Length: 132
Image (cartoon, rainbow, N blue to C red):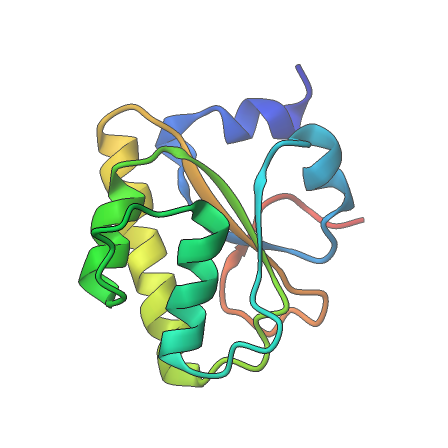
């Protein structure tokens, strides 16, 4: 198992990270849940895009609390792309929700990683790994 695969299976390292490109993540985890936020400019569009990509249950209420509840019930790995058009407030809340979900899953011994493709390093997130 490679270093990245080991890291992504370590629940204690769960969290929200950034990468410059998705290639290595996709090679390591080809089945990672990909979520493109292209064209999502409002909270409603953002939540709809995530709900559709993750096939969230009918009870999903299209609000931040419901998203946090849904994510906390599922360990796993998410790869976000095309997030740059999001309003800063919506992006900030999304990052907080993902971080809380990662902490919850880590506490249960289940890995949860949300990774944002950020080639311009605009997000104040730790890198998932050191870029070459």
